Length: 226
Image (cartoon, rainbow, N blue to C red):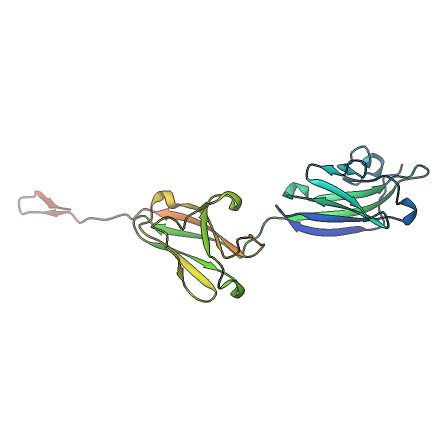
């Protein structure tokens, strides 16, 4: 079997943690034939390395459905960046070569309204600014802390964190008496579904205030103040 494939490549995009559907067309004469999907660009080994087939329509994050007319579809759930790459849709033929179509999947990193770095002085207040779309003006606003947004800790229940509406397109969360432990990654927004582009990622660092004292001596050369 030749490893030259295919006439063209269908390019699709999605984001990590989302799902994507790969559509694989076929001719009506193949409606009852075995269908499958593999990674890579080698037709000769595609069936042996298939991640899903029409004989086994569910395989972890992969699910195959067939309309029995002109196409089958493979849904990939909970996408990761590693899912990016070339895939081959295959249709097995008992006589002759299997038929293939190629798909290039690009999984993008989950993206924010913006990502920004901030710093504050320990013991002082610092305000986190969180923009939101105009249509979310009445939505519940949130702030949570953690390296990953899907496991971050809600901070609005803590007394040092308060929410103030700054304008019709942003709100402020002042942190009173900043502590060293407040440093870290924060996520804020107005979309509880975490839709792409509807939240902000903030990296907060802290600084220690260095105090300089003036040395004062009396007439006999003794220290009396600093």
